[in-house]
Image 1 (tube, helix red, strand yellow):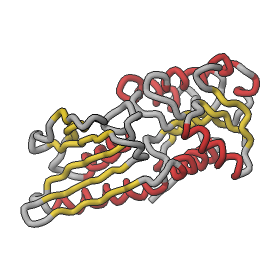
Image 2 (cartoon, helix red, strand yellow):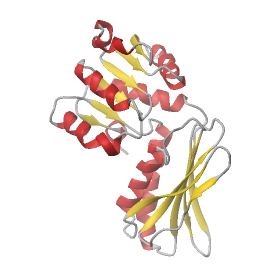
Image 3 (cartoon, helix red, strand yellow):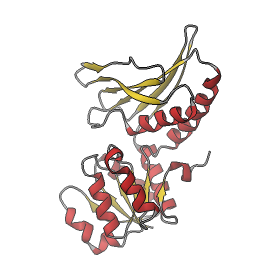
Image 4 (cartoon, helix red, strand yellow):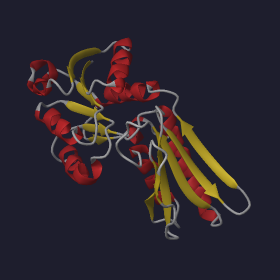
Length: 251
């Protein structure tokens, strides 16, 4: 399979290594200094492009890839609120293809399934209050993380007494804390911590006066995310529309 890379930071380089090891060819690498290559024959020859950039440029990258007729896999977050409906419409009725996930890790996919199951169980135990904390490296621009938002939406969909999640506290790299975990009875807080070079830790906690129950996913490095992105690209090459991890892993 021919793969183009959009974004050539740490994730892009890890994806490149795994894709080549799995027998794929990298035909184009686009980064901040060669945006004109979106119009190149090499980029247009790709079966799939894999995009990991940042919230400010992700949407523009999608439009450029779609214009070139290239299917896209993306793990960029922070763009969904403003452009989500438009992008989904382009994929469902406009003939474009995007496989998007806030997290490509197989472990996170399993964790997400466990999260939803636990939320359903907790419908029978109203004494437990739910909250979430996510920890990421200091370079991450969005808070809460896209993965935390996806997990929170899974709780809202399955825990009847919670109608929405709200931003909790934010602990900045310098240790200062803003925000609050106080919220309405039908809400629950998602708090964020930015420190060091943490790839990603997500903890969901149910607490009562008697005890607490916590589940945690702790990423050791970027390899799991990169492998998942390549697996998604292999899937996307054979499918169309607006795709996600529920299509790739049907638990």
